[in-house]
Length: 627
Image 1: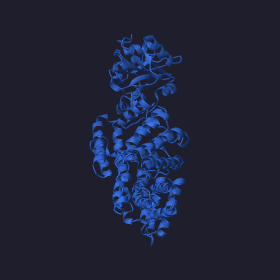
Image 2: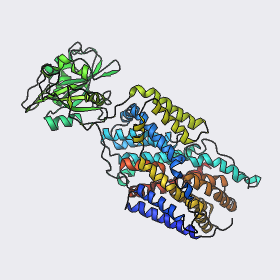
Image 3: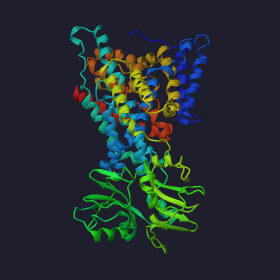
């Protein structure tokens, strides 16, 4: 191969790379602003005589219309559309049901699921779709978002190595092999790889990533970050005790078929036993909005609010079984769906003088009334302190009464428009869910996915099809779509694209590759392969993984042929190693999770540095075992 001569343009590009890394590591300014600054510098320097190859100034901002950036915008909108229907709440509930609420159990399930999905869906798409799921899991469990998103994001990247359609470099590899074969003698021709040829390697990498965070996560992940955003008002038990002194918890109890409770009226049970039955589960259906004059039918389950000793005595008396934690009611009591709300009865309310039972408060307004705060006193079914239980269902409302109620947030949104109430609670999710749109959301999501898997249509266009479809069918509005996009991520990625192009256009990448490979000349085959892997890893940090693959595969094949190694394995080493991008947030997935979790670049350096080394070791071992 002809030697590449070092030029002034290459020196400028290497200085720009060093400056970019310096800004990223020190975070003197935000990383998205740093990327925009580098874009401006590259553009201005391109006007200097002798530096014209740094960038085509007429196409300097093409990165904002690139396939990768448009794909990220579209997938964020698609994810927001699915979230708007409540699907992601249900996914989160299923994960919590199977994985519990501890980090050690939740993290492997989430990471493994995303890793598997990203083996056939672009990794940034898989990560973006699960971002709202992980946010809800964080809110419900109290696990900081920063301790869940990085394992999920890294496994999304690793999942791209599971199949030959899992990442752009692997999709491109067989075409590059066909091109390289034209310059090789017949006995050295490379066979194309099958769809699942790389699956053992990818599976080993995903398992390595999960094991890494499982055993070392407590040391390498940031301990905080953004606090879990329950976004849902107040936790039931803590809030009742802190504000009103009501020491009560939520219990789930089983009522057997022949229990003495069968046929009893809910309101009578509440008053007689100093507790509050807030929801029932009967014949497979959970009902939080019901008439308190209804009778108990069994077998069923009840969600009861009350003091622990009172509920236990009640269960023992009637032969009920108390479950150790919420099961069928977990979704209804999740702070992202429902919680404690406070409402005031204004002087002109039509409810004054009427009791909750007169109004059928639960059925009409969706409010499970737990207490009435009137003056200095709080009336409640539940006995606490020196206060005796009160049949609040029969207490007529007065002007100025503060109602303490458990309700779904979508009910509370509707009550904000009702002039008979003044909603005091403000810190709850005020985006109304649209479960009736779930059919349209799934239709356009599956349409996008089918186009990605079974057609040659450009990725960004496939995802935009789903995004536009959801907007047209009013799964979400165009304004909600704009708000769903993380514009800091968009500007970070789009602004770095010209720097990657400058690395390639000026010959800087080829010169660096040639110097390293020349230095490795004569070394053992395994060390040459490791050198190729390290080179591909480094290039993927500063330029697109597709660009790094196109540049390095021909060089790797030439080195393999000259050293007597298997050229196909060397080519595959390049394509897999370009996914080894964890140290700085230049990969699309890392950029996506950086903002929501509040990560700093140093967090990626600390956690990603070890992951990078593990990736190199495991991929090298598996490549040589499998091939």
